[in-house]
Image 1: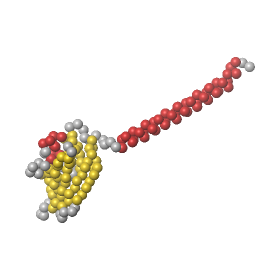
Image 2: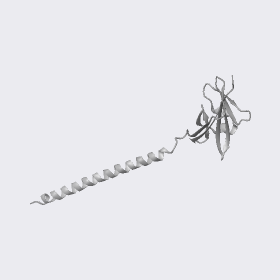
Image 3: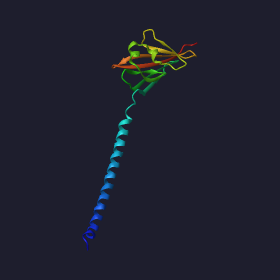
Image 4: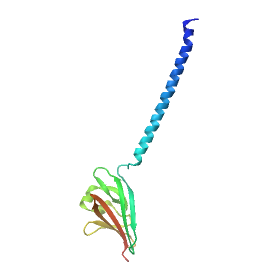
Length: 157
């Protein structure tokens, strides 16, 4: 028997061991990637995309006749130079200058068919619909956060 023929079974065993090792490393790599994807998905679920807002709570009080008071809390992830505000009757990130100068109508808070007017003391704005219905929004600070209260009423036109 030649020395090469005696090595044949040993080379076969080494080849099988290398194949098993390759499969084990591949399975470990796939498992690691799956864990990484699941971890990233869990982290991403609680975060907002920069420049977006979501409504967290919305409370309505219709106890007074012809009047509804709505309070909403929004969570925003605004970019630098922006702050939470209202655009087209939805929470949005707006230029911080608008809030500092209290020029609320510059952030386009009303719907397209509504007219915007500042309240006399600049504490908020009104959105007037073509049919005469008026929505008044007042802004105040609560624990150093701006909060908006929105009330709706019919003017009786």
